[in-house]
Image (cartoon, rainbow, N blue to C red):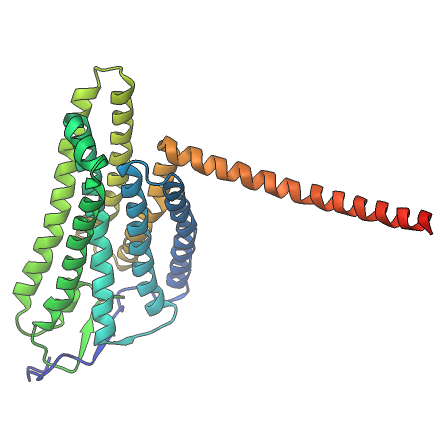
Length: 339
């Protein structure tokens, strides 16, 4: 690499995907995951619409709607980055566009995990300190304030991942990023100085959020199961049911992201890594709506009710059309008899 330090930020970024299969097989894989992502968008939209229809009458419905939104944004951002590079064959992008990708990817990622963390905090608080939970979270709008705080933290973290690359020193006006999109670690390795502090910063906050969410999920689930397993009251059974629903959604996140990252590190097969990257982006958006839709009574009943209404409307239209035709024929016959 040329070690002449440039006086400003790079102008362009070259996305090097030489390890990714770009032939017919790679494009077919890309189209399959793109189609899967397109299926997940209406599924998540249905979950959000069901929560909105319920008027967010419980904080958990608000968290689920936010989680569905974060899952959708995460999948759309990652899949669109791969689609742009592999299908549209955009090899060179501007550095500003790279920074926008950095913000979108990490902001969606942090919101995914922080929203999951918020769900566990809410359930834990509601079960172990119910009186203060009702007083602060339900009656005084504490849930909305907590959501605003968490979203602000995720937004600030996303912005910081845009600021960090601007503090590094680059040796060319065009840098090479060895990925289909701009991720913090790959962008940091394209610089020639101040690389290690940027890598440490990005990895520290990512694994801090992962660890915080994972620890909260395991600890809260363990405490709730211990408290509720010997009780047969309806409230405790409902809490246990909600707890396992959250656990299934968390497993979809962690398995799709962390376990896949570990597999990629040990199994250095380009095609396999390419498929795992796409799988990690699509899985939460595709699986979580099914988990919430089948296991949450409020969401399931709302979706079933909407489906039944659509069926009734669809069957009523031909009937109304037939009635109008018959009525029109009667009017014609009546006019003929009057003449």
